[in-house]
Length: 77
Image (cartoon, rainbow, N blue to C red; front, top):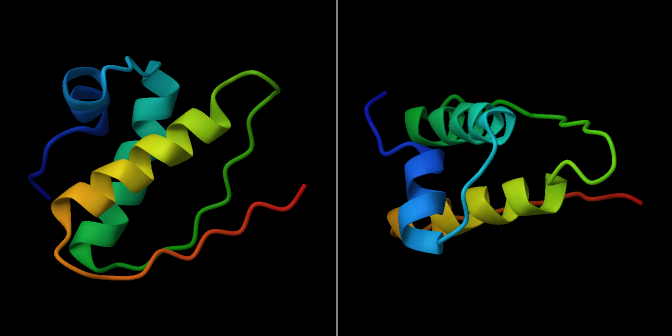
C-alpha cells in the first residue's frame, strides 16, 4: 500500500528520528491498518530499545491520518 513511511513522519512531523528496526515495525502495523488486514502484532524488544517511542509514533501517525476509528492497546507489565 502507498503511504508515508513512519520513519519520515516521525522525523519530519514529530521531530524524532526512529531506528530502522522501529520503522520496520511501524510500517508493518500501519500497512495492516490501512489495508484493512487487521493483523494482531506482538512486539518484543530488549530494554531501552524504544518500545514506547515506536508505539507513540504509530498512534500519532494513525490519529493524524485517519478520520475516525478506535485504537485498542494492551501493554501488560
